[in-house]
Image (cartoon, rainbow, N blue to C red; front, side, top):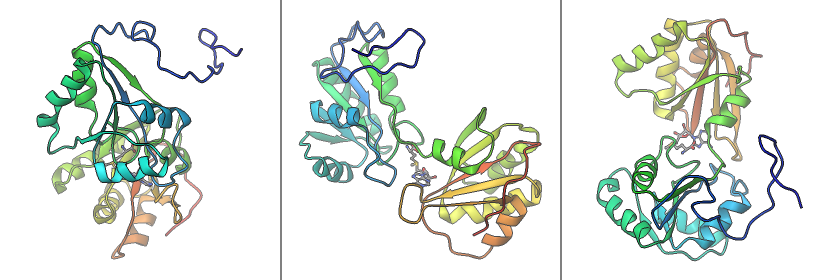
Length: 262
Ligand code: SAM
């Protein structure tokens, strides 16, 4: 039977049930188990077998949007009790979630897309569960930042993830100006409304910096745009941009990217 070597890359056989808390090596003393379960960022095929098993076995699914998660569960024939947990009710729902864990329940937490806690609700619940001594498991799976970084073609051996750029113009300019000395690639989540403006500021501050935009990844109209900040800003100026996108800015000294403009 295959087994995981210490420090090796062997694959563990699938297991029908999660290990008891003590075996999971997290010194849990609480009765419950909180699993953070990543879900697809566009393509419904991007969900792991383990994610489906954990969702199917959960006593409760805690979802950012229960209707959206309900559709995902229904697609996989999973029936689960759900409660909502999003940035506007997190504070109110946290005691309820902790009560479920204290009652020994297996709770699966999902956000609308990608990995919970990454620019999405999840961190507070995870932290509270840890502090209450429950077992916490984080499943690996879809997230937008990794395929965006890799697909950008910019160095990925070391990188920085900054989540969303600040909304306020002055703060956003400050965050982009701080890239002047940054040698690592930096990944930002962006909105279609703000991308052109962020690129215009970047073009003003660091016009020759190689930059990539990953748009609608894993979906029908996935595309990557690559060029210098000045080239991408000029190509997008005044254009209506739609979809979900990630901006990746090369580090100081990064080699130019092969040009692929919108
Ligand atoms: N938790 C998610 C994750 O693990 O990536 C991120 C959630 S955050 C609210 C949503 C942002 O992620 C979008 O504004 C966009 O920047 C990025 N994003 C999510 N899905 C994407 C996709 N399919 N293509 C490009 N960017 C995406």
